[in-house]
Length: 160
Image 1 (cartoon, one colour):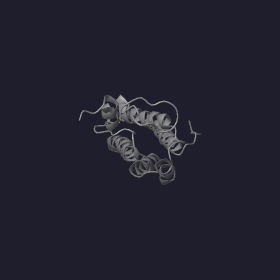
Image 2 (cartoon, rainbow, N blue to C red):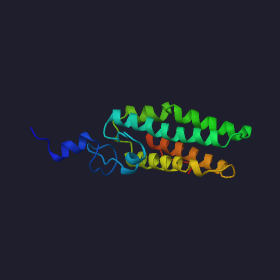
Image 3 (cartoon, rainbow, N blue to C red):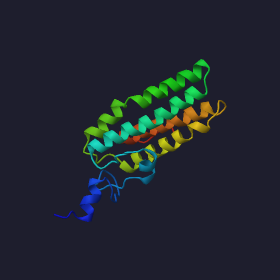
Image 4 (cartoon, helix red, strand yellow):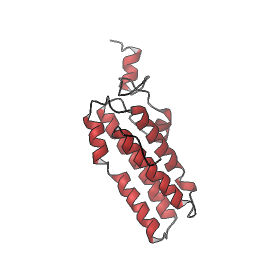
């Protein structure tokens, strides 16, 4: 039996999505898919969980490379990077609990996608950051994580 065009797209996490909430067949952002191999998209609960993990890991790996490249760091900057590395390693349980446990009608998935894209774009800049730009860059990464948490919890980011 041949699958319809729409059914095949939904299975791959592709399609068009408008408005709030999660619609079957959400558009998989090409940017995230090209930046993160195997990026699953946002089409169902399992995909959203994996997407969160993949984005956090992507940012964390670039932060770890940045930390290593700029060693030795003063204690305050080293502590800030360590805090962000921990934040990239573990899901924000409060934000994710709402995201995973709701019917998603209160979640603006477009905001999650935008926040994820912003975080990945910032992570891609890590290799060009020098010691002088590091404090601002860490502020930017912190705001990106805050925006992700706010989007997943259905709130508006107040840090940016």
